[in-house]
Image 1 (cartoon, rainbow, N blue to C red):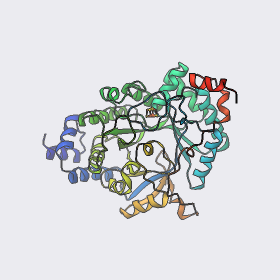
Image 2 (image 1 turned 180 degrees about the vertical axis):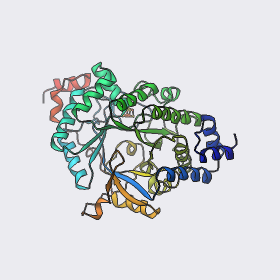
Image 3 (image 1 turned 30 degrees about the vertical axis):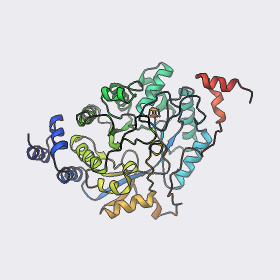
Image 4 (image 1 turned 60 degrees about the vertical axis):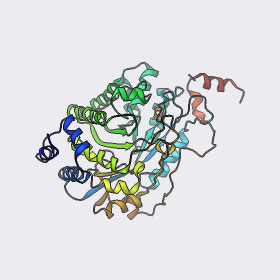
Length: 402
Ligand code: SF4
């Protein structure tokens, strides 16, 4: 099929095949791809509202046994630079989030062998006890898989335990590219295969949770493999309908073992528009301004995105790999309105919560990204000793006189 025929098929409401998607990516002019994606966005979201969420991205530990070669964030077990956040530190971060109008933590971290499932359950219960309305969007599929290995429980049982403790929804991190050839090259096949990632989401949806889906592109994958990734997400969404949104971001190469270059802004817009066309059963697409910057983030609203994602209070993962864009609520809203849209606050379920928070209450401006903990802070949270040490490093540390 030619580009013209495929575009007509999409405009008539048809679904593109993998080979048609590849033709669009390789051959369609970018303005045409953007126009088609924008038409789909306008059909799915009539009116002029663009949403965003105020939440905080908290990385509870950077200690990780997975060692993905694209990751600049993790530290191996026993590293002097490894940290685990204490419950009190996490409460403080929640207080700061509530003060700027937020109602949710996006809580993710490394695969730390010294944090058993009880640590997560105790944390979730403690958060819910102190902040009953506060939401926990937590633990991407590879973290859930890690807990199945630690507990020797099936995925559904781990998810049930986490829900009972207070888990509200699951973020779509760790998907990278859902093709095992790519996962092996990125050294992330061991943390979760493509099937394992999808199965966690399937089980989460079966348990009644809503989740997001992501894609990290621009490293060792082919365009055809990106499309296979999208097709696998589309299939699962047909089956379960549990994904609320899709977020694509480009690989950030700085300080990583894999190295290489970052994909350009034009490639991002092309990828975003293609995702809107292929993922015809996904209600929302987020603009990834955290990796692309505010200006490309704003342009995303003309290339299929209907949501500006999260107001960024804290970021540790892509920042470690070189991306450090920061926008507080005032900036996010300014970018949305300047693109000709009306900005509304939402929750994880994409329900509108209201007008921008800063217009009704004085809030502190946050023009610099917070980090997990101050540099050089090697303090250890007290509660860690309540859980049995599993790693040799942790056992040795505990055997030393304090
Ligand atoms: S991407 Fe996640 S799982 Fe992989 S090394 Fe980094 S922290 Fe660990």
